[in-house]
Length: 203
Image 1 (cartoon, rainbow, N blue to C red):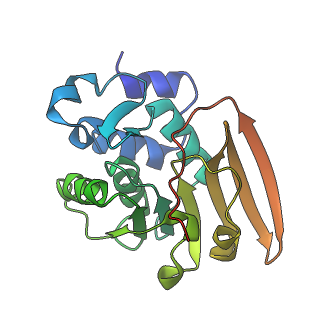
Image 2 (cartoon, rainbow, N blue to C red):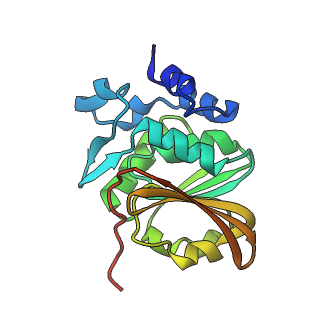
Image 3 (tube, rainbow, N blue to C red):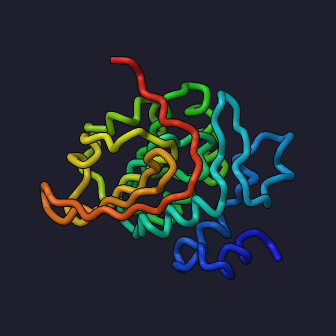
C-alpha cells in the first residue's frame, strides 16, 4: 500500500480536496536527487541548511486542521523545499493565493524552482522573516507555519481574518488558533510532535 493510502486508512487524511492535492503534488518533486527514492517514507527528510521537508503524516494532520478552501489567501511560513506551498496552491485553486515566506535565500529559490514544476501562478515565494508575518498581503484566511516557535507571534493573530485559523508548532506541540473575533481566539493543543526551530532574524 502506498503512503497516501496508508494516511487515508489511518485517518490522517480525510478531506477530499486535501487527499486530491496529496495525490497530484508528488513529494519526490521537492526532494534532491539523492533522496528522491525516500519520498514514500513517512518521515522528515533533510533539504539542506539544517532544515527538513516535514513528515507526510504531520503535513496531512496540519492541513486537515487548517481546513483550507478554494479561493483562500494563505500565508505559508517556512516554505522550505516548497511542498506545503504547492499542496496549498493546489487546494486553494486559481482564485486563491499562497504567500510562501522562507528566511534562507537558497531555500526560497529551491522552493520556487520545485513548485514551478507544477506551473502554479498563485504562489509568491518571498525571502522574509516569517515570524513577522507579511503585512503587505494581510489579512489572510489562514496561516500555516512549518517550524517551531517558542510562542505564537502576536503579529500573526493581527494578520488573520476573523473566522480564520493559524496552525503552527509551538515547542513540541501543534497548536490550532481559531479567530472568533478581533480579540478572541479558541486554542487547541496537540502534543507530541518534533519540528526544526523557527529561524528569527535578530532585530
